[in-house]
Length: 191
Image (cartoon, rainbow, N blue to C red; front, side):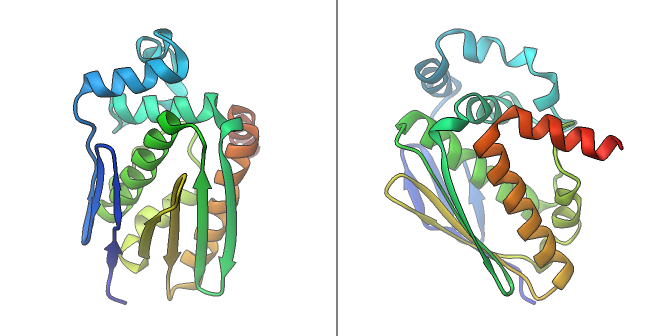
């Protein structure tokens, strides 16, 4: 299977391009403004207080995106359609600040999978291991919706399809229940 990621996005300072994903906020000051709008001034300054979101290979922006989505998970809506060869997910929010972070996170994670750069976040699902190890067999298409982002990911590998579907369900649980879903997932892994 020929690996390809197709991007079609332009939202504020976040841009996706064909062949890969380029994500950028205009500056850390721009990120600070978005985070402050979502969580107040404590948000960006308290990122260091979220050790379970800090991975072996993460930066402040990625951790801030994760934290904002966990703390504002009730503002997210998510649908997942399991396809015979993958998934179609739509994740949206009416909150424009959260939407910018959501799109940044999704684009960043797709790029990480393409690059096989596992962030190794303590709370991440083991399902991601399969996706990072088999990224070359995943075809991704991205489309902006009026209030979020739609992603179609497919594969010819049945194990990768199963991992895509399992991960999509896990992310839906995170969107529905926030950090409690992550804690439950970690507890299940430890047993």
